[in-house]
Length: 377
Image (cartoon, rainbow, N blue to C red; front, top):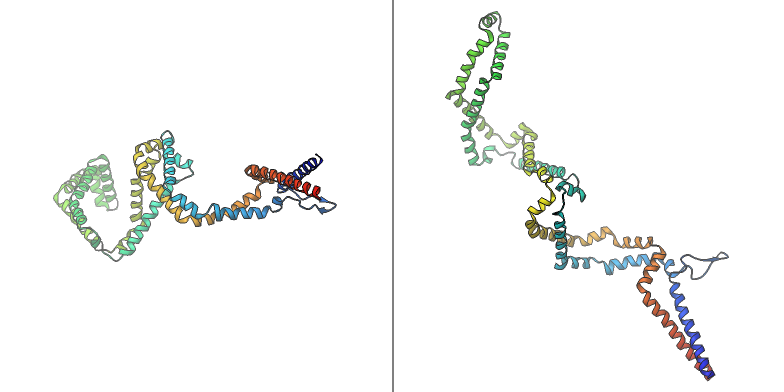
């Protein structure tokens, strides 16, 4: 009976020693957080292992994440999986459904997602593009004559329009002379004409008056404007100027007219054709509803594919710029020791418990063996 009690007592003592030793060893991984000093001497094993090796731990965790967990290859493999792309497309479709219930305009929607002054930037981009294209075209054709650049159809069309333009100009002139404003202008011209012509002309003006002279001149001018001769004269004038213009080189026309007279009208025309103001004031819900089929079936897959393909190519450079290793290290360094302890124990609580129990079991077995050996001796 005494033999069994001795062995049992040795087993209990061994188990307590083993369990407590392992429990303290686990605690000493984290505790104490700071070094302890007695009489100016640092107590051994203070601070705990992890607080003492915190910087090394942070560096090692950053290195492990970059080399084994969050690698460029793993991200590329994830991006290339059809399942992941489909998930992104499904998520985007859900966002579109939410936009169909929104009351904000396109401009407000862009501002909400951080895209500001987009209308002005698009207009400036169009203007810049026109400027670059026109400048490049002029540089490459500066020695060419305009007649060699104009299509035959354009030349024929312009020639055909000369009589039409002449009719419009003559009719406008006739209408102006028939108006009260036109008659007033004519009387003023007559008055200014006689002002510096001497006494004879002044006497003639005195007898006939400006109104009567204007009444005499006005029908004559209108008669001339309505005549075939005036039309032929104007058409011939247009034709001569047109043929003279066609003989000039591109560089000469550009220098004579200047960039503003050539480029600015094209810029303004393209900007007006875009009708950005109209689309920017359109409710985003209406825009999405009107183009939902095109967006879902064509635009979304193409955009997602393009974005993922570009990310796939640039994953390594993106990760280098993000410097994930330093990011992880900095984050770990900012963690409080309490949080690190809580995180590690939360993950490995069961394993730490098993280590404590294993220490107790091994200590108990060692106690039994020691008790047996002691009795035998």
